[in-house]
Image (spheres, rainbow, N blue to C red):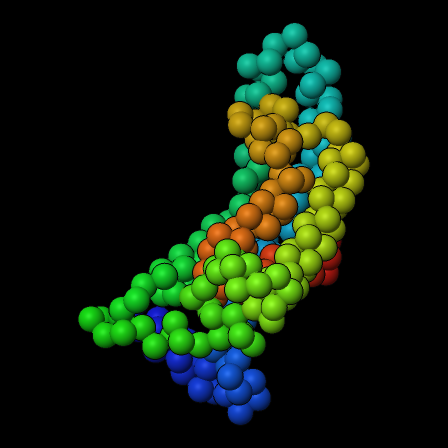
Length: 232
């Protein structure tokens, strides 16, 4: 944790001439961008996998017709098809899973009052007047439409816009590929039904985690939306 804290502090020192009192917040955004850049090869692989899965849809449709009365045989046939084509139905989850450790590091870093038995100096840093270790409930308690509350309103607006774009894209993709492997790969069908709404859950995350972690989430989800648009 102390090593990670020093990394954030060093990035903040690097950005201080440009962002002044909000340098630590800018460092978190830069850190998020570096994590997403490291995960970009996985995102490219996931995009290739999505295109490959789309190309399999006609063959999956044929298998559904052939094994319409034998769901177990259909399931095995679809799994064999994906294995033959070297396509994993779950490959799109890898970029998100890679980010979880970074998110939890930020969450714990800005949730602890001490680091290595010393006071956590990072908790004294703000984004405008919103403490990076604070929560939305703290901002609301300080008065509606105060500077701190406006910071969260901007974050909520960005997340809502990105979530709406992701929802429309996911629904459009599902409509274009009705013969989805989700109906035959165990558990994937349920994931497919929930997937269009997952981005909206980010609003809840931003509301309950420390502002530093919320910045990570907002930056990462925005990066994902842009990345998908470029790679699609």
